[in-house]
Length: 268
Ligand SMILES: NC(=O)c1ccc[n+]([C@@H]2O[C@H](COP(=O)([O-])OP(=O)(O)OC[C@H]3O[C@@H](n4cnc5c(N)ncnc54)[C@H](OP(=O)(O)O)[C@@H]3O)[C@@H](O)[C@H]2O)c1
Image (spheres, rainbow, N blue to C red):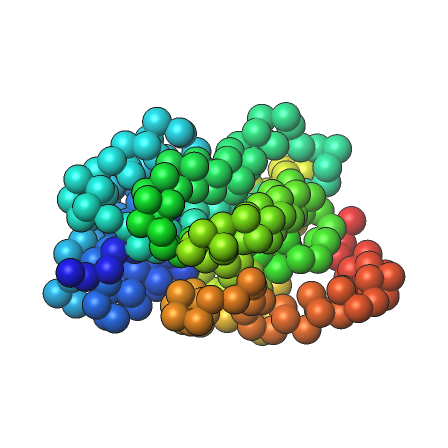
């Protein structure tokens, strides 16, 4: 019987690369994301590896939808071995221009959805006495990023969720691991909300992020997928993927220096 992985945010970017890699390595794959067309297109590619694939259009920020996703998965495969919490969105802009609705939206997708999947799946993992939970966080959950306060708030929360839950569940046979990508060349900016006092500022912030993504040393979605796969094979507490490993380590060792540099590197 093949092992099964459930991946959220699986229709593109890191989630899609992860789905392809797990299928290539003999896993049956459950794909979740909202847009049914892109999800189906990804499912077709994953099927080419000869594994069973279930694509379930799901808004993971809704508890009932996550419960239905897990029910459908268990009905189809009878078990889940690996959960990859990956669906995420981003926001960029000054705190004072963000609305409460902005905060609610990003917390629902980047944090609540991770809690929903874990809460829904955990009884099954506990009954099996095994299972692996990979939480895709961010380097923004290991160091502060100015003008990305909502995003970093959710990603620091994911770090706390991952690290604390790991201590609780490891003695019960369940691995909880954090994979923190650095800048990754996906279409992440499609779902990034740029915030500013007027259209001009919003456009400037967008252009700045595009420039950073084009010029910075960035990983590929496949690099992050490989790190997720390595975690499942050789579980560890966490890994920071790509060039972001350097500034996150620097931030841990000399936080005053990194804070000083960050304040000067980003346009107000
Ligand atoms: N790219 C980067 O530079 C970077 C850096 C650090 C961390 N990360 C993290 O890596 C993860 C994946 O990022 P990515 O770059 O692969 O992003 P991406 O290319 O934008 O893909 C995001 C995926 O999440 C899905 N999604 C978004 N909202 C959802 C919702 N409410 N319910 C279900 N699915 C949802 C999207 O599909 P639908 O829109 O169809 O739902 C899509 O499949 C995120 O957690 C992100 O924070 C990315």
